[in-house]
Length: 272
Image (tube, helix red, strand yellow):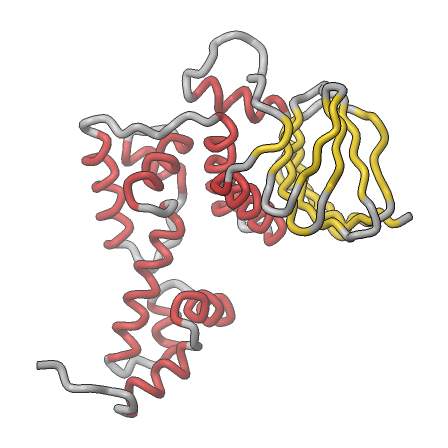
């Protein structure tokens, strides 16, 4: 019998875990919070509402507070990430989204869910929580809850103008890490609605959008023979490894290698 929690961590009351299991299981039990899991590998057998079903890789399971459920894992190893979401967090965001106004937390669609956006949002939140990336973690939590609440982010006629104000601010402040509170205040929106509307409008959340702007400017500086260390400092990357990792993730190479190739003239071609 093998059931191992490789990691278990808590951020602001939201607990996350990554579990590897085989020839093991959880007997019938319940939780007082929402439990949302992303199956990374293998097949999990679950029992819910008197029925047995099988969760495959790439699928999500969701259980409301108080739901009795059980699961079993055979000899094939199963890896999954779980997020334990307090009712108070979901209730707060549901109220903010005007989903309901009573004193109860919302009842979500539970069981096995085939939803790639939800799977990705769950994975990104767990990753940001694991790294302890405060602002990113808060942003990913809002995106995850938006997917759980299944409410589309419809832009009103003046919302695009509000978001453009935020975009211009991000473009003009490349060396300062933006705070969601400040951006939301500028847009006249709650943080929850800012993150969801901004993502719908641009295709990515505001903090990732700002990072893209910073890295584009970093490329421009490197092309103009600015030393990678100086470029990092100019753009507010006081941790050199953070700059290198962020640049490599987008460009596929390090700032030093990129600068050496561009400045040496190798691989250049004429532009008419």
